[in-house]
Image (tube, rainbow, N blue to C red; front, side, top):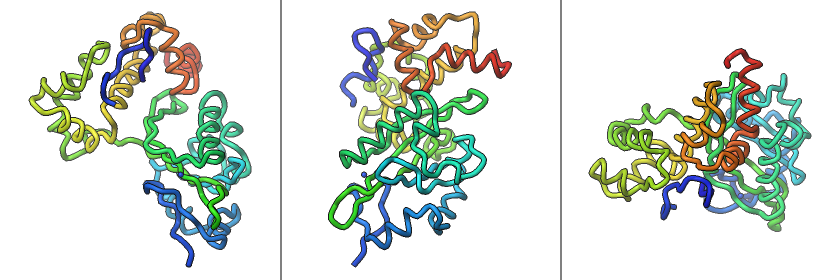
Amino acid sequence: MNEKPSGPAGFGILGGVPAAVPRPFGSASAAVSPQLLAALLSPAHASPLEALLDTQPDLIFYVKDSQGRYVMVNEALRRRSGRAMKSDLLGRTAAEVFTGEVGERTQLQDEQTLQLGQELHDVLEFYLTAQGTPVWCLTDKLPLRGGSGEVLGLVGLSRDLPPASQHAEFPRVASALAYIHAHFADGSLRLRDVAAHVGLSADTLERLFRRVTHLTPKQLLLRVRFDHAVRLLRRPELSVSEVAHACGYSDHSAFTRKFRRMAGISPQAYRRRLRELGQL
């Protein structure tokens, strides 16, 4: 999240016999038999996998062919797309389903996996609901490979992040999270400073962050900044430049570019949406 020289400093030094069904969180792309691929990728096949994943409201699941077209989706993705039926998504690319930069960003991710065979893991993203509320998620994508290793499609998961306060270890990081919330606009904020404030080593605190929030410290800082930005953008008396500065960006254009990449729309377009909804 470095935007130097104009953006915030972040945390500095911190930092895709038959084989099994693809493992979205595994370390290697799965080789799949032609028979299993046919069963998995057929749009008309009401597979047990799809039926199972339809029961997960906070987990988006999809399979795409070699052209990046949806061939299997679950109910959560159908709801997020705003389509009436899951079949409305089949045969379409992400850029055809999701307008603006969200669709373009997803299409670029798909091309990385389909053309280069790259795996994507724990990509932090957020989307805006119809009411303009941000929802954060982590996305994973793996290539689906045939018997000779060729990429025949991809499988992806995007899981919404649960509230950190629901985790059993939340009390251990509550003070550190409060410190970050109080100092996130400070461009010199470092993990070691937070760790020193709560009396833990930086390594221990980073492990706790990952267990409790499912995020790296840099991802957590980005989320805190953008949650704050969304709240401030609901205050019409503040200019976009003032919002950017309050979130740790010295240059509002850098903030606007980052917001557009994350949300798929500009801060100004987000405010227009809020006005249309009668929330601004």
